[in-house]
Length: 487
Ligand SMILES: [Zn+2]
Image (cartoon, rainbow, N blue to C red; front, side, top):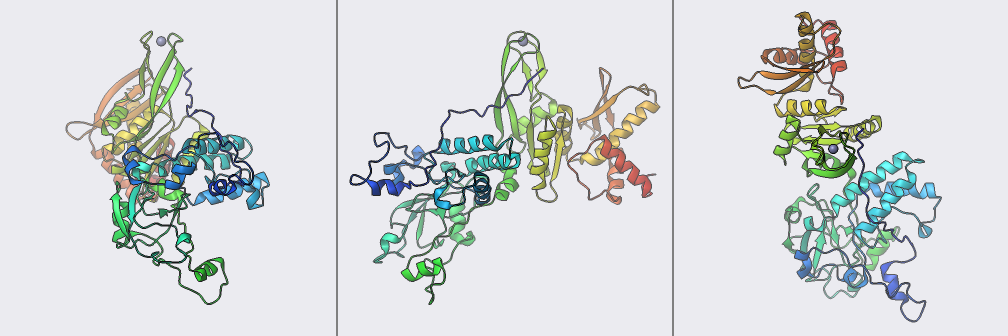
């Protein structure tokens, strides 16, 4: 039996979630009061890509240690659920949190989230799943190579007696976080160096230094959804904290984090991903290591899509005994050109997770869940050929029926038909499997066109469910008959 193992293990690093220690408090404690804990321990520096080293970014953290994070708005909601479960109602006494406020490095933070997901897996599986989803999203949001670097050249804070309260220094470079998956302005990592906060995108106050996604240029051209004033206007009565801050002359900070939704919708921009799988050779019992494609973007990697369609993507050969087979492993296939996502799942639980993910997808996207490699391969081929798998599935039941009528398939034998591609004359090619034999068959496209037209006229026309298979085809045929559409 081939076993697929997950392989996200990494060294066990736990975040200290000692809520009483802000980085700045460490400075404040110093010699006179309590000794600084682990003073001899080297403080981890924030991650700064080599190409960014020249810009003097994150000077506070470079001196004192720590890391900055961009994270989605939903983290607050997840954190509330964690607080409730842990019975931690007082904000300042929180021991367990999903927020990155005290995390020292990306790895330590992701590991702490993975540990929490594991902790809740049996008691609160939904929460565990949500935490795992945000780990992926937060990872994609914190690739500093994708962030813009912008120099603050404005005069807003010049000669201001409250200047030290302000969080930008003229002439200094700042990170504007964003990601390839969601290249939209979300704020500036200011002198506080924790996360991003909104500042006006006033083109006279900023100079772009690095802008790999073009986000900063778009934001400064007026595309940013941000605050429009450098100062919140003074209000006569300080009836809120923000108003009180405004009276002091300090601009209250606004954070507008992107939503998980932004990333799910933009998944069609994702890069293909591989995961290592170690399993035992069914031929000789030796160890086999395989790099399985778990995410495949057909637009970015058309040659991988071709391998999937030809059935060679998951093929392995044992280096020991030469045993050859296909490895069954989960894979999400993205075909942005045909607005189709196909999830190959291995069990019920994965199917459920795929459904949850697909419910978030925008209208009009064809989302399919399949549980066999051949269906996976076939659906990829259908969308790639610019066809619709719904009339195709109806046509296939017709091919099976016809083969049985003509005596090509014994009435009681199993017969599977899979679309394999377009023929030279534009006809549709199929593999017909009867028992252990496979035959190729070419069929004129008119049959497909007929069912496509029937479907368009029927009540099933706008119905685009996750599972399109033989069961669905029979349902459609029944509907055609009931509605007097079929001939
Ligand atoms: Zn072997």
